[in-house]
Amino acid sequence: MKWIRRFFVFVILLSVLGFLGSLLARLPVGERVAVLKIEGVLINSEPIVRKIESLKEDKSVRALVVRAESPGGSVGASQEIYRALERFRESKKPVVVSMGNVCASGCFYLAMAGDYIYANPGTITGSIGVIIQHTNVKELLERLGIKTTSIKTGKFKDTLSPTRELTEEEKRYLQELIDKAYEQFLNAILKYRKEVDPNKLREIADGRVFTGEDAQKLKLVDGLGGLQDAIEKAKELSKAEKPRVFYVEEPKGFLRRLLENRLGAGFGVDAPLMLYYLMQ
Image 1 (cartoon, rainbow, N blue to C red):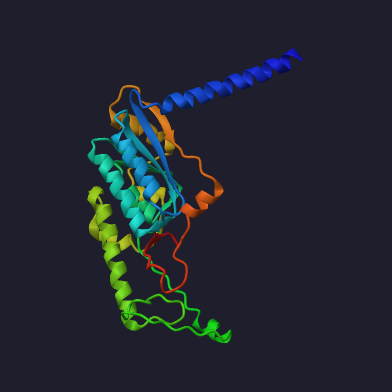
Image 2 (cartoon, one colour):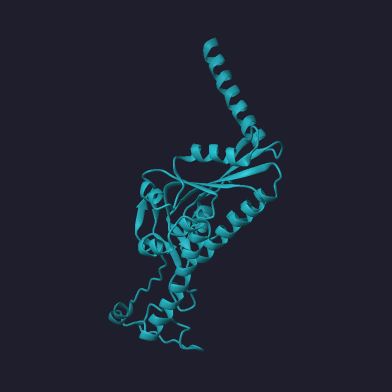
């Protein structure tokens, strides 16, 4: 029985040491490299932006590794995170991006703010483009004997209402919107990807996805490698002697994760018009 007690004491000791090690890594002392996960559909950017801003102000943090694992999200959220990473860079601290299984559309957008970008050879990335979707259930409602009436203040107020067809004027209006967002996407890529040919970029920026290997050939990412490669690169770019690595984590319950990753708009004329950088 003594060996059983010794075994449990050993396990408990290891757990305590692991906890203390994790706790010490989080203390804002010395020189550190932060690893921040950005995952799920990008709708609510506020928690992520707040973390990036906090890391920027933390003098012990010398570099940031972004682990990007997302199919994309709304235009606004993607642009806010992109800008937050720019602000981090502007504080003279490097940003290294590590693309996971999927880093597409809005996730690809924000990844372009990295000083150095890694993708795995088989990472699914790209999907450069903007989309607005419209679902028309008018005929279904008519079969059910349901009729709707809209009282509105302007001809575009109920654009994307699911109870009627889009007019040709509305289609032109929506196309103009997504064309502007598309140009913003291309400019965000070209701002830091100086080696990318703008004409070549327009040729391939048609919503298609690439493997990480193809993305490197297109000069959309800098290197092939995983998270640990990104961490080592961040250490190198930080110019710190022996920086400690810590993971920025926030425990979340199921309900909170669900709410933060909701697609949100729903049906009805009062729902906001949402543009998405979303992998389809």
